[in-house]
Image 1: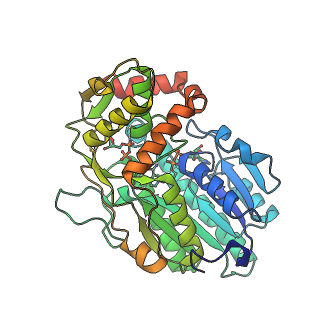
Image 2: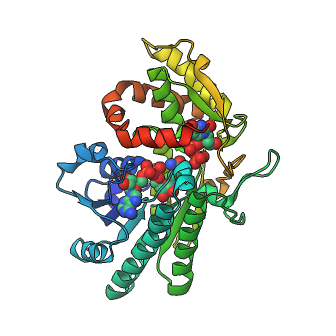
Length: 365
Ligand code: NAD
Ligand code: TYD
């Protein structure tokens, strides 16, 4: 089915979205429930510091959405859900996702990203076997471009055949999960798909990540910590475009494939922070410090900081016709507007735990 097939022609699905209370997972749940209202969506989320049930609360009243507070490492729980809900699709977002936290404490990353993914794969394999190995079943694994390592300024962008060279405990644990997913397709023939996406931004992004952190610190008049020389490059993609890409892959790809997802929006960190300052100066009425670029503070670099990521998404465009709807200009403006209009969403997240984390990462900078 191509991405343009009307939703009416498709067979409805029963899916588990792991990590559906996190940033991208919740955006995906909103996307999917809006587009495929006939599907049964089970959100499975452990509600770690990064999970926020409020993000999907407006959908919880609907009969076809069920929220389950649980861990992807809990095999009996997953076995029960697969049976009870007659699941035919897992869209797997749940992960520990922040590089700086992986430097402070890598154990949770190995547990959730590797052991958790393995647990889901094993449970889904058993379920798929018990149902007679239907071709229509699918395990979609959401991964990152960080598994490919770091590029030099002139290197070509990552393709699906770029060798893995992860450099942080986060990317190494994601690489481990990617390899397991690949092995389940090649060894057992279990239908799997994988997407490796570049840096996302947009609504519901937890304050520790670069873009929300800068937006919030500008609003609070706090320093804007730029690691190292600020010349590191990331390839930014609006989160709604990531969701539409996963949708396109689930509906259009044959099993066993992997797709890179990116927006062709390479930006140096320091340029991105300047853009955010300009947008805030334009859109926010009562900033404590204006112009906000005065708050920019260069701090000690992140250990092992990858210099550049860039995605070549040609395969996704050629095979499935997917292209992003937002440019970095339109997406950043929408994002800044969202953080200004939704202070009730992010203010409670600046908790004591968050302040403690902030101290640990930035106190030594
Ligand atoms: P996030 O940290 O915002 O959310 C992760 C979610 O997973 C949270 O709701 C958390 O409660 C849940 N979770 C964590 N451990 C769990 C466990 N053991 N059991 C069940 N739930 C658990 O992450 P995100 O930014 O939304 O990323 C989602 C996925 O996309 C991750 O797999 C990440 O590697 C991948 N990804 C992220 C980006 C990005 O820029 N954020 C880019 C490419 C790929
Ligand atoms: P981040 O949002 O943590 O994503 P990732 O490390 O997964 O790419 O960081 C994006 C870039 O911004 C990365 O090069 C690190 C940099 N950065 C800062 O300069 N200062 C900060 O306070 C943070 C959180 C990130």
